[in-house]
Structures are given as C-alpha cells and as structure tokens.
Amino acid sequence: MTESRPLLLVDAASLYFRAYFGVPESAARAPDGSPVNAVKGFLDMLATLVRTRRPGRVACALDLSWRPAWRVALIDSYKRHRLAADGGEEVPAGLVPQVPLLLEVLAAIGVVTVGAPDYEADDVIGTLATREPGPTEIATGDRDLFQLVNDTTRVRVLYCGKGVAKLEVYDEAAVAARYQVPAHHYADFAALRGDPSDGLPGVAGIGEKTAAGLVTRFGGLDDIVAALDKPDAPFAAGVRAKLAAATDYLAAAGPVVRVATDAPVPDLDLTLPTAPADPDTLLALAERWNLASPIRRLVDAAAAR
Figure 1 (cartoon, rainbow, N blue to C red):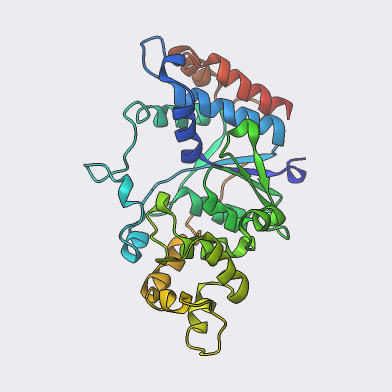
Figure 2 (figure 1 turned 60 degrees about the vertical axis):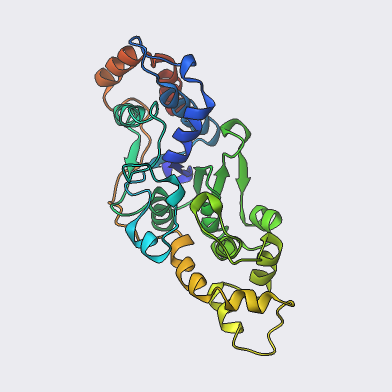
C-alpha cells in the first residue's frame, strides 16, 4: 500500500542543475545534436531514488519564482548574484530548453510536478511535507531544507551534495551532529552565519561556531534579539555589540530563511503510477530525444517498487 511507503519530495531545480553539470553535454544528445544531458541525468537520479527509497508517492517541486518579491523586499541581496542581464535567473544556455522537455517526460510518465506562484520549490516542499502524511523524504542538494527535518512527523532529508549514489540521510540526530543545532533552529543558525549561495550576508563577525553557540544558548532569532535587552544575558565578549548592530538584518532575515509551509499548493494525487500515464507520448519523446534508456530505467523502477 502506498500509505506505508514514503512520500518522496524532489527539489527539481537542485537536481536538474546537478544533472546538467554532472553529465557532459557531449555524452547525451538528441539525434539532431541538441544536448539532453540534464534530462538524462535527472531521470537517472530519480530512477535511483525510486529504486532505493521505494516511495509510494512522488512530487517534483518547481521554482515558479526562484527569487520571490516578498523575500527580496526584506533582503535585497537575496540571490542577487544569480541575476542575469534580463532580470531572470542566470541559467546555462544548454540547460534552458531542457527544462520544459523534462517536464513533458515526467508528465508522460505520470510523475507530478508542482509549483506555487511567488514561491520557491523549497516552500512547495515545506507545504507538502507539513500537509501530507509521513513518512516523507526530501531529495535535495539545498541545506536550507534541513530545517524541515522532524522525527515526530517522520520528515527526513536525502542530501544529494555528493550525488544520489552517495546520499546522506538526515534525521534530527544527523543535523545536530553536523551543525550543533537542532533541526528546527537550522534557519536561525543560517541567518546568523550567513549563506553566500543565497546572498544572505549574516551578522558581521559571527561564524558558524558562534552562531551554533548562540542558538544553543538562547534559541531562535527572536529569543537572541530579546536577550540583547537583558544586561545579564551571557553573551561572549564582543558578540552583543555585533548582534546589536545587526538587529534590522535579523528582523528581516527570519522570514527570508524560513521555508514557508503555507504556500498555495493545490491538492494533488501524488501516487507514483506503476505504468506510464501516456505511453504513446512517452514513446515519441524517447525516440525524438534519444532518451529511451533513462526513461526505461525510471519506468522500470516505478513498476518494481
């Protein structure tokens, strides 16, 4: 029964970017010479996840807005370094046409893809992980999603930083062991430390060790800021001044780094089918784009789980 199997939530952009850079364009091309390396790599990663994790339900979360206006309004540097000249996201030219092709293939197989207006894939995942019954496994290369790890609701992260073949499975103990903070305070820790990959400056002079110590001692950002008004609060020398100088940033950073759990994600049947939803379209896509082998691997993994 699918209810006894995990829900697999896939951070689609995280994986297809990794696929694009992990599989050379020269290694996967359509008959007309077009690169399909990102599609091939993504399908193979998803096939591995389905074969090894045996989910009953699957959803691939999309960035309908990779840089939501409401986050930028709070911190204007948010992902600014990834802006292209036209104001969109800087994406390799060879990847751009592969994304809609990937979505076509997934639709023909019957894998649900879903996004939400003015929200990122992380927020879609946060909403589904909160709303849907567990167990839930989140496949991503984005550490921000560690904040969703919850042993009580059975939410874990399958971290793909070293590739899907070398997954690191994060429960609450694993997050605490790596970062010295509880998973539910990972976002507070990240805001203090900063995250260059997201354009978050952090608090000047506060590194990872100090950030972990502050979270462990005081709790979340609101608790840390509140403690600044208490003369006897046990801040290390110089740390109080650094935090006091950054209170405006800390007030804005909280909502930016926290994954939304109330994005307008529609109710969907996330059941992973055991046979392709549209076999004729799938066959045509496989032949046109030279994708028969990776498509077959994913279809076989779904049928055999």
